[in-house]
Length: 284
Image (spheres, rainbow, N blue to C red):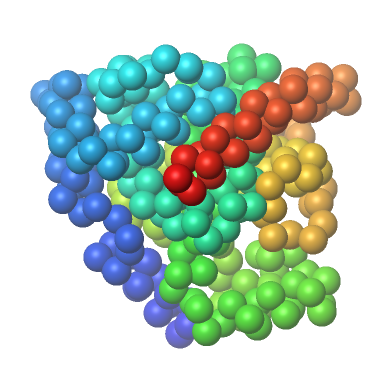
């Protein structure tokens, strides 16, 4: 492994250097690995942190998930599942950075989550909430690279602009890794299950996804559709093609794709309003 890539991986796997909430997270991790612990116990731990609770409830009530009356953390855990709430808890501090520093990326992430949910429901897939969460987290590596590679960011941006590269190619040229792999490392260091970490790590390279190819294909397709819709700003100047392996895995056809796009266009109006509400609330 190249030295730069190795150093970056060490920084990311050392969760103490990341803007997380270690106390709550460690307790949640140990409880979620204990079969005897109840949803109520986990909910009590999260509820003790008011800021964290507010962020989780806000996300759980976003149009991406389609539940509009989640009023307690234990409700959120029952409706969304422990893995999803744990992921939202872990990501909440990262999302705060995203909302403040990169509204476009935050909207892109919300949009991708919404698209992933629509695709999963349309195809009748199980674990829609987890697929939605993988969509929400898919670009979390971009935030971490922005935080941890401040000196290299101008060079990455320069390559995107001058060499006409996709972000991931520019990142690889400068860092010997990209945001998808960094997001995969991060989700592993957070002990997220493979069904979440694999779509994050391989949403640009579905072929490398082995155990959760369907979920990875959904997140890949959602990412492409949101880029094509022009919703939010992923930082990429172009829309990538849908990878054939994802198209085949999801058994797509042109009619089905068209229906998904129509459903998504309707839903994105709600997501935009939700994002504006958040922005206004933050500004007050």
